[in-house]
Each structure stands twice: as structure tokens, then as C-alpha cells.
Image 1: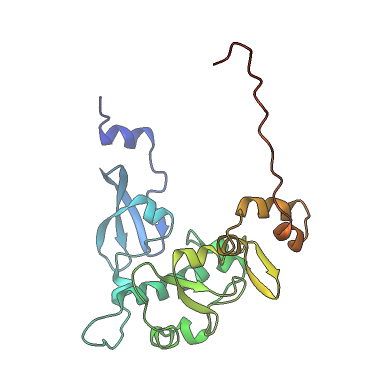
Image 2: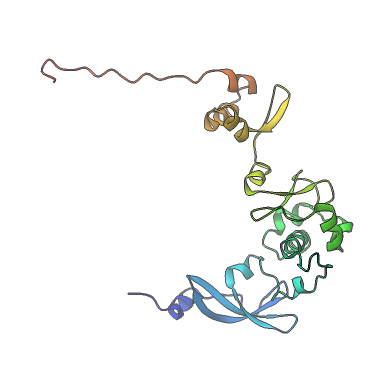
Length: 226
């Protein structure tokens, strides 16, 4: 029997009613849509809006949308740069807002936004340029560096995955490259290379020594086998 949404609310109540997240104050729970819980929030601008609870809780939604609407950019060909504005606002939020869900990995560890971008979207847009297309987002080239000209690019999800702090990089024959990319490029087993390096192998041995081949045991056949 299908559970009524109101029963789900009573079983797992939200304990943050009345709490403020960014510019939003959570007033009450409203509905369940596609297995997602929604809450009624009041924005600092006065507007009330139903928003997905997880998005509010994790810091992905910080206002009713008025913050983005308040950012002005002279349009090119009559079209506002909405994806770029969102990227600009998000990078600032995760560096300066302690309530943002991802703040500990950015502002919490000292990552800053340069003054040139902190107070001007136009400067950010002029330095970084338009988003190349869907699937691209802002990426810092040096993950320990700040958001500033020369250290920021538009990158795909795969490029960002290969540029995280936990990515294993190797230097082989003068080339420094993520281990996963090297393995794919040379048709080698990533898991084998990774295990060898973890167990203390040199980069040269890990790459150049052939994998040990284990022979399958011979099956002894009986005299009456067919």
C-alpha cells in the first residue's frame, strides 16, 4: 500500500523550521513531489516560494532568485548570460558564506575570490569568457589556488575529475599527467598501476614491468571422461 506523503512528513520531520539558509527562512513543509520534499520559504525580498528541501539544506538555493535578477550585465545580442552569472555567484557563495553546504572545501580551507571578481560580474566575464556549452562549469587549475585570473577555466566533468586534490599524478619521461589519463593513453590497467604505486613501486617499474600471468590449473581427466 502506498504511503501518504503526510505520513512521511510525520515520520521524518524537518527540524529546521524557522531557520535561515542564506536569504531564505523555512516556514513549513508543503508537498512531496517525485519523492522530493518541498518547503515553503520566505526570501529576504519578501517573496514566498516552494523550494526543494534538499536544495535549501545543502546550500544550492540561497534565495528565491532575486540575487541573480539583481545582477546586471549589458546584454549581448539581447541575451543575458544566465549560466555565467550563476557560476560567478556560486563561486563567491562557497568562498564567503559559512552556511553554504560546500563552504568547508572552499572558504573553510582558505580559498578566496580575488577583489577584481568579488565585486564585478563584468570583470569575471571579461576574464573567463562565455561558457563553451552545456556540460561545462568553472574549474580551478590549481586546486589550492584562489579564484582569480589565470587560475580559472571552463572545464567538462571529466576534466574536473582528473583535476581534483585526490587525483594521482605521475611524471614519466618528462611528462606529468594524471594516472588515469596515462593508463587510458597507453592501454594499461589503471588499477594495476595504482596498486603498484601504493605498495611503493617506482613509477618506472610500475609502468614497465609486465603484469604477472597466472596460469590456470590443468584439469585432470579420468579414464572414462568423454
